[in-house]
Length: 272
Image 1 (tube, rainbow, N blue to C red):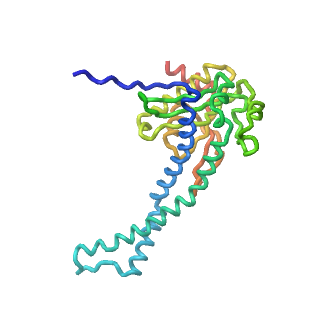
Image 2: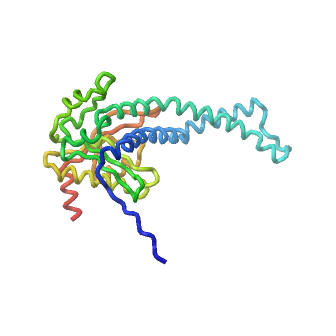
Image 3: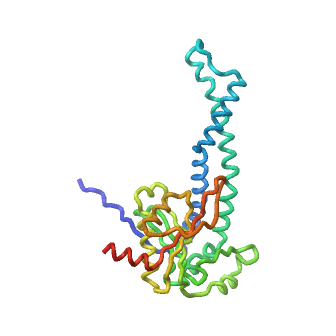
């Protein structure tokens, strides 16, 4: 019996028109994933569990639903609904207070110029690029690296200029900066354990440094909620530069990571 052909794992460049919706949807989804991760961490936080258990016990005492020693065995399940009753409002409250941080970040990211016209924006420098990782026909992840002259800009488009093509064209100066910026980096949850995101990151770094000698540094903003990105950046030699912001109830950090050309070249020599 012949074995089925293996599905190729490939990294390909962004295709205008074909990948527009995929890229925008994925970048928006990354912010939602962070919200879900933050909520889950808070659900299992010791303080949350303690509050849930304490309030549930108080309600059970008030209702006089604690089973007695001489009661039938099935009556020991009587307090269970009250434990569930407190779980729902606590989970709702956590999401209610966490959500604004992540929705504000998602709105900020999706209103930036690179999301308006992906291909023209990243075509301004040969070192820039958008790459998509696929397993057969399945989407696995993407990475967007901006090496343009305004690679570090965090400007967003407002209602007055977001549909003005002339405004964007005047702002989009061609050329390569000394610092490239990884604006977006995402891998589907089910593939992260395989480490494919590390291959994607390595591919992008190699392209940036080998394509244009002008680039001396690559920076990336790391969300500490996403452990998989932390592992990938560490593996490729990115060091923590500074904290650039915080998110959520517990103030999870957004950190700037940096990799210099010198560090990358030294790592390449050791790998040979």
